[in-house]
Image 1 (cartoon, rainbow, N blue to C red):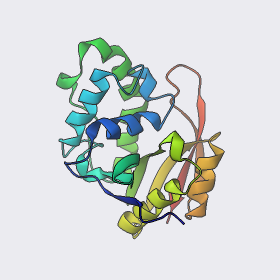
Image 2 (cartoon, rainbow, N blue to C red):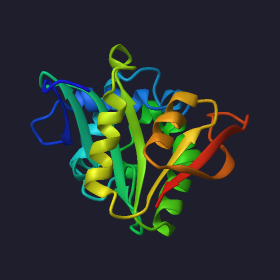
Image 3 (cartoon, rainbow, N blue to C red):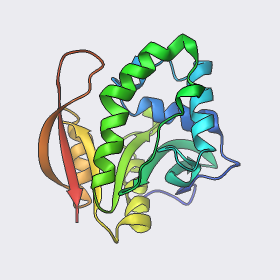
Image 4 (cartoon, rainbow, N blue to C red):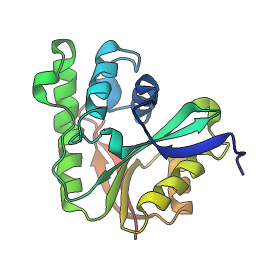
Length: 200
């Protein structure tokens, strides 16, 4: 069990948006590198900062939770309400330098995610990330406990890469079961085997 130095709660305007952007980026090795080569890229930082201030974005401050150790962010979870038409980023805010990669990610990942979530019930957990230095210490469980405490009275959805066995084990521990298998976005023409998991 983690000590009181660890906590997980909904993000606030006082939280470090640069760290939130970092952990959203580190969630998936295919989606975000398609947009920018690094989480430290100015364009990526600007995109997430803009999203956090937009109530209609899937990365609105209202939908992001942060795990902390001694008040420093060490992980994130992003949970969006299903049944709503949300956005990722307004097209007029896309920096020219990353427009092609971002459009690829929007068409291949974000647009289908938003359309599917609009047809689900409950909530969709779209990002869970723990800092690599803190993995294996129970922080992932802390994040999932928080998500279930906040949203678990309704159906919870999430998607996971089939080869990510540690994440699947974590989600299964909290009552998620594999509902379907599909080929997800990999940033190129190669299909990526993924699972859609549900906790009812």
